[in-house]
Image 1 (cartoon, rainbow, N blue to C red):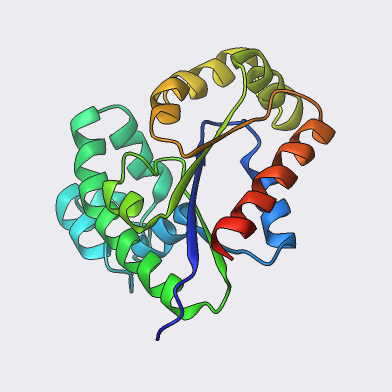
Image 2: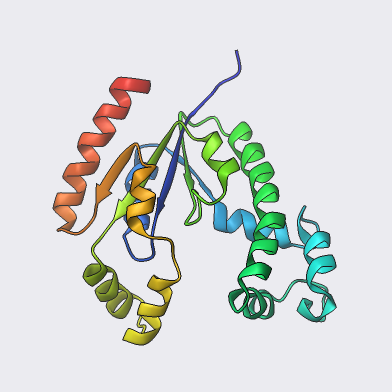
Length: 202
């Protein structure tokens, strides 16, 4: 029988601390599939979404070498909800295909599918055995964006406001990881969750 890993979908809003959780699970042997990286690959000239994006948005989004200028494309779609939706309708299926390929090629017992827009990309949700949502209070998010990423308050708030609500994400979660406290508190939560995952699945 073909090896079927446990697939955990990890999501959460900006600056909730997903990367810390990723590192913890990688240390446990999990293989990470990063949907953001896959969307970059999908948009490369050899990628499955490239031609459809150029057809939809025109040559003005291309750089001299024929690659998509992500900044130019970003300017178009972030100013226009319909354009963003059109882009996502092209990119999400391509990312889904690439994710399936990557999952099929790993021998890890646990695969972590990380995507900020996991719940919006319904196809990706279907791949997951469990959905984990990482949360933090707006104050904590703001503080992290300012101290760790050097954003000013206005930019940080704008980034936070552009994302779907944490409460909405939590509704779909099998497990919620509260990352509002100390690193030690987070580690304790993760140890408990990991022990439960091992007992249930591995």
